[in-house]
Length: 401
Image (cartoon, rainbow, N blue to C red; front, side, top):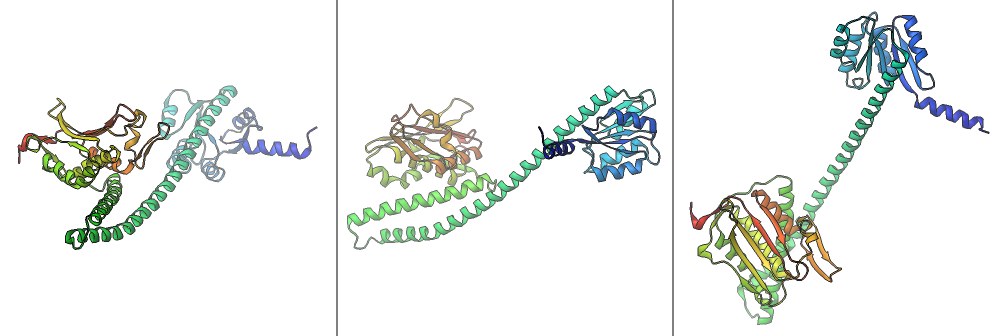
């Protein structure tokens, strides 16, 4: 047997769930007919016979629906509807305008006033329930959508705030890293330049130290540029650049690492190479990232090849950096260019290491030049070939300089 407390709680719940309907009707008989058609167990009904009073009740009670007679005194139903639809806090409340006039004149005026539906009098109780329930369902959908939009906006604001904090923290960390690293790099370069009383072993250790310092400085530059490019704070400064000189400059940076691993390097001959309309500093770092990556994952006495080949499309060329190193599972071909993405091939016993920021930087630079970059590999242990195209950027052998 249900206790009185439980029954009361059930009634209270049903009361809370009842939809609020405002009936605005000047004819007492019609008002009673409408009220009797609306089940008080389902609807909480308010009533008014005047337009000005109806507007006050709308603002005070926030009904879920208004059933509004077009010919009420003081302020007619059309004007009440217009005012409701012009106010931000009431425009979403559905309005069903009613009229006893035949013809389509009142229906047209009602639609122009912003009414959501229209009924001719006398109103059939069955049709009234159908129209009311239809309007309430639509309002429920609209309320849910508005609630979802507010929640999305709130979460978006939180994400934007967190993103701002993250970027500020990242810049602080980068700044704190850059100063001491720059000092160490300058100190090592100075000692190596003077080369006084240094043994061959000491020189070699300092050269390794300098290479690592420069790699970390390049990583910091990548981080800063990735943030800048993602926030649209930069545009490439394009100019005609010798591709041969660009490759030469990159290989000078990695000469010691290539020699230390006794890597065979195959590269195209400079005099026959075209020129590129690119940002030379950014594109040099793209090539440097790809070459550094190839050296890192190529075994001792391995092979790295840099080549430039025509694609056969619009005179474009594809630039490739290919190694015979650890290779890559095809499942990572897209992920490898994601920011901070690490490709780990533990199941195969091979880890290709931390590729994220360098390759993310390459992708952003290439795309900023309207190009595309991708990777190809026959699988684990079969090497990788990183390739990119800059459409319309290549000019045959210095033409236009």
